[in-house]
Image (cartoon, rainbow, N blue to C red; front, side, top):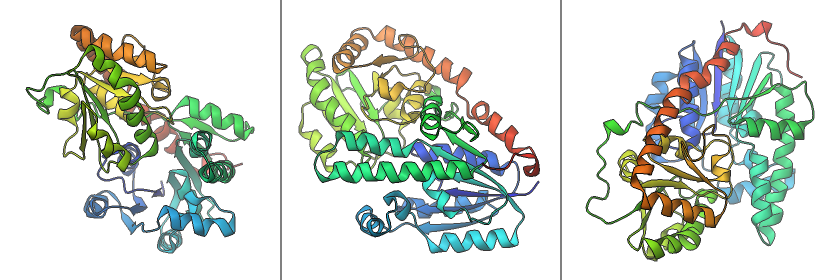
Length: 407
């Protein structure tokens, strides 16, 4: 068996946000098979400080500090007709590392995590290529374009068009393309229109040992009246900003008409200005980054995921379900999660339904506790990472020479 090159747009350590949780699980599983070399980017001081963990896992690695701002990437992308998403992750250092590695090591497989890293696949590479697109990013930008006004509508529409063409081109180059939900697979296949291109789903798993309510003291807000409603996520990410802003403005006040002591806790790093401004509203608590998210989840009467724009599987939903908390998810946030609404979680397709669901669980804590227990049992039975990754690893364990060539 040869060696594997793993290309990731963010260092998979620490696994403290959605994409890094997935890349971390995949990298660990791949490293258990044999030598893995990693080329990746860091964005923060915490990312760069995690290099020692990366070095412990990888046979060799390069970690590049990403310094290209979105504005600069956009300006650089315009003259060349490139997607901004690619220009934002350009790196001569990674290109040179990849070139040297392939020339000096028996690399038989390149595993790309996140589509923009596919730009580093050498055109001359004759081995096996796997691309985990995770989400269909071009569709995300198309959704941004629909919601935007003025010049940003054109900016997002351009990115959706160019990035979509690049995704399709790279999928035809790869031997296997992955997404994190069957819905994403179906949507991508429809746009691609080529049944010869192999596209499949690897649904996100959850570390049910780490996210175990029995290992956590639920003491995030003792003595404070509730109900306590929690949202978790990266709080400078546009869909999360939109979700909490809309919930605080359109849902929470109506809940507080019945439950005046209701609190909405927003937990996650880098709150955008629009999120920080919500702290001025009655019953809104903008917590920001925390060392350990689990006590905040364990203390919640319910966890909400009211996203109006969402792609793929929402880790925030899986984490809360594994922590035995009742979850109320929008239809977009619930998509791709194989669970039964009313039993394992509640799906609310409108603001009215979200208000009703929150008030129902607030009025009936026993129902919430039963739903949370059913949710954890469901995670244990169906969402362990080893089960989710098993088909992919079995495919990779075939000798690369026996895998059909790329289209």
